[in-house]
Length: 292
Ligand SMILES: NC(=O)c1ccc[n+]([C@@H]2O[C@H](COP(=O)([O-])OP(=O)(O)OC[C@H]3O[C@@H](n4cnc5c(N)ncnc54)[C@H](OP(=O)(O)O)[C@@H]3O)[C@@H](O)[C@H]2O)c1
Image (cartoon, rainbow, N blue to C red; front, side, top):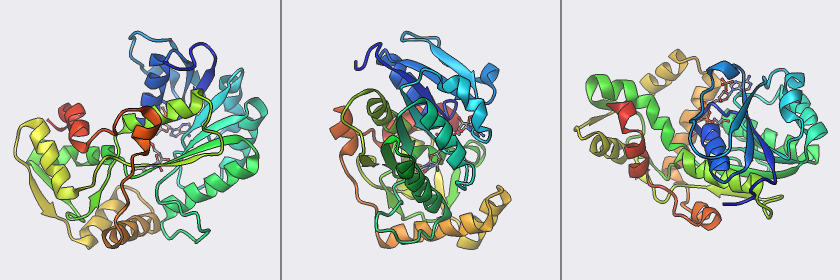
């Protein structure tokens, strides 16, 4: 337990994969938490032990809509669900009018050497980090590696055809469990000592896409095949899902670069939370029902 009764935290992205777990981590620690949602009536949180969650309406594309949720808040968990920073300056301004502290969910691919980021997703996170720095808010930046939960995108092919058809079958990444990102975020929000820090967060070891497939097969108790998807097909499928061409190309290029230069694995999660980072196998077991 930490920070009991001392804080009120606003969590954006609270209905999503990471934010929902940030809300739960804070509740379990006894920290008062407010969850932002565009449709509060549709946002459900477990009615389990821990402090209540106050769900409030707000839209990050409409900065003034955030004001009621920001009143009396000590810190904000900011998740940026867009692909550009266009709407960010007025949002940071309104946050700065109500609180001094922000924990931003960035990305491991952000580079500190000022180099132009080829991947548009890392480029917008790099720009968000710069805007937050310039805002003068006390900040903590979390840079997680790829989310284990990206594998939820395979659920339909697994449920329907017992197959994972993806590019980069041999790419090994130290994917991170959303609960570990949330566990770090909750501490950065409610405990002292994290001001001005940037934390790169990874899972405990790297697993190839084929090995991730095997871990899900083990979790659901059914064999799964892995099929290498040709690059052109992967690109077409990303475009069909609505990704802009430059984002699809940037993501594919970033993955190819990771094949050449694998992401390092670190123990930051354990250092900050006291518990080892969860493995991809644990993640697959936690989400087995979504693949069955
Ligand atoms: N996937 C990865 O491998 C990876 C790696 C590093 C960093 N990231 C970053 O992680 C973030 C995504 O996290 P996630 O997977 O937890 O998100 P998610 O599950 O996709 O959820 C998105 C959240 O954003 C909220 N949202 C969407 N539009 C909004 C708006 N206009 N105003 C207010 N809230 C809005 C949604 O809330 P409502 O719809 O309920 O309002 C929802 O809670 C992104 O910034 C991404 O770049 C991802």
